[in-house]
Image 1 (tube, rainbow, N blue to C red):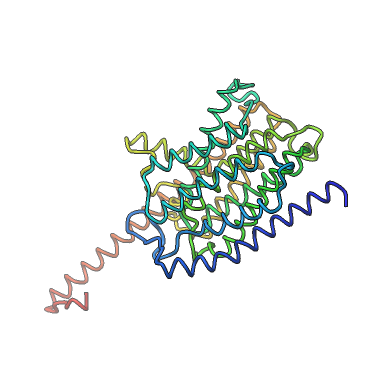
Image 2 (cartoon, helix red, strand yellow):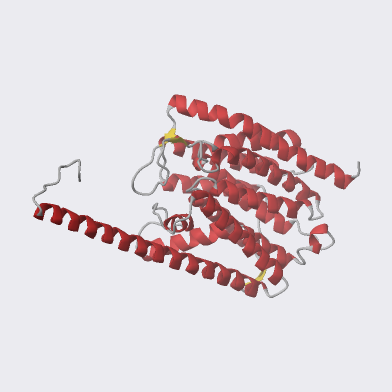
Length: 393
């Protein structure tokens, strides 16, 4: 077996191991959660689900992922792995505590910064150049560290915030981890091969989780899973950019270092665009960017009349479309590629907003019409001497 075949066999083994471990663990987590009453209770304000559902499904993803990469990735293949494991453990514990007892946004934010610092600063995993985006090329060392920490924290929050309907965060996480894993596996470097193992381990565990999270969900990911998943994907994106080599297999699809940077951004663009839009909207209204509401893309799609599964399919398809646009535009100036990315995103959002507004207006008109008909019927009954009983009403 040659070197390339050996690595692809390792990737498949890691993917299947993460998948099987998660498939085995999730039913037991559901059983324990129901027995101990560890539920996400629906409310009338923001949460969409109407049944009491366990919300610690991230435990299954975490254990499937962490056990797999600890078993199969040798230190010489990926020397920085222990930093990623340490950061993941910090965010896993923070998310688990929040799902079970609730913690303030400040504590979660501090935990995300600490986790990012462990991997970015001590693990020396950071973006070194923006390759001409906004006219910026090489970054000074501490500027690169600060920029990478901020980026990791933002992407971590973005995945946390899109975990609002059945199957969405898991599906977006699966798409990102698989695509980043493929880019890393074909990047032509040993570091890329090690990082690809991490990506495929996460992808396998996520598939196992989605078996129980696709609508109607039997368990939710919760902050237990969304925080460490978002963080790992942000780190994989950085490693993907840093591992690119022009003589690799990846070069046939992505033609340059600036190309891999905008491709990595496009892979993360749906959660990043949604979170940035929501943060700006909340700041404009003078409220905390961490205050929960119903203004995310998935809420707008549900209001437009789409089901959970249809909403997930639309957002995944949109993400793939954005990646395709960037692959087509990658040889242009990176600022032009990002401008096209934003233009397509804003066009899709405008169509969604118009569809939602039209549907809500139609629903309001139908409600007012039905109310008017009911009132007319009651008046006619009263005029004819028939007083309606409570049961008749």
